[in-house]
Image (cartoon, rainbow, N blue to C red; front, side):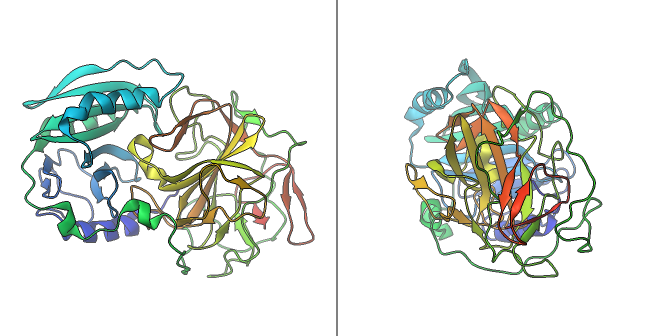
Amino acid sequence: MRRLILLPILLALVFSAAVNKTVAQGFLPVGQVYQNDAIGVSLKIALPQLQVVEDQYLSDAFGFTVVDPEGRMILRVALLHRASSAQMEQQTWELVRNSPGLDLHPQPVRIGPHQGIKITGAPGVDPSTYIYLSAHGRLYEIVCPERKDNVQVCATLLESISFNTAIRSLEELGLKRAEDVLYEPPLYQEIPAFKGPAEIEELDDIGIPPNVEPMAAPGCADWPTSKFLQTPWASTANGDSGWPKGWSRAGPSYYGEYLHQYCNRTNGLNDYHALDFRLKTGDIVYPPASGRVIYAGWTGGGYASLGRVVIVDLGGGYWSMAAHLSSINVSVGQNVGISTVIGYAGGSGYNQDGYHPSHLHQGLYLNALLNQSNGGIYGGQSVEPHHVRYYGNGGGYYETISQYQWMSW
């Protein structure tokens, strides 16, 4: 969903140093113990090139996430501070109930001396293992994405984890509640240009897409050209750092790249044809078509990297998701038109602002399912956009979208 993450994570770690006893900036050295005194958890960094990102806002599931150099979740640990340890089974079955279409089976698990319940194959950006664990009278939620390259890494970290008596209260942290910052007025700010081997630096042939054909994606779906679809930003977008006002690009992440993977997994987010559009923080985000809002809020669990999202039912089995928003402007159940501002662009992720460089992650889905408790889409098919209406530069349609293509509001 983005390529350049080091600066936002460094900023996150500056915040971390104020909360914990033992937090380094940048990558944590192998063997260093990360300790979170507010939730009573510590773990040893057993592998190189890992970072810890702490939640910036106080949510019901408050904690931290261990990420790899690309910003992908390795492990998430959260204290369910509004629940009691006696509610462990209740939390487990809530996850099962909120994962329709999946045959999930809770199993007993033990981490050190503490007893818990484990569910494998639960939905997330990647299918994930969830563990609900009781320790010292508190209830914790642990999430491990089940990527092939992550299973052993997560297991190694779990072997080193310990649960201790919390020596700081959550109130001492002075954090804003996550629900209170969903609808805060957006902060407009300049953003640096994306950098990387795939980025094209010059503004060449605005409005004339490069001669690159979209990649074939067996198992995905196509947006029907008879159904309306538009570019989801306003004429005021960008207009800074050499980017033309009202324009953005299809990238840096494109079809089949980076986290934009998979067409039809049953228990993961299918985002092969999702697109990243660079927008500055606070730029208006519209829905790609009219519909009804079915989720608006922070994502959690295995979806936490998406930050604030708005999911809109566009009719006919089609949904859209706008992710990483800096602020949300709509509520669940609200009917939205093509000129309804559903939110404002940003870089939210892992329950904090500024984790990602500011951009809009826009996905389309067919016959998908919603994990209501964590705000995540899974199953169904990723949908390739076609016949996308634009209004600037004389107006018209983008029949297909090529990589790095300039697109108008």
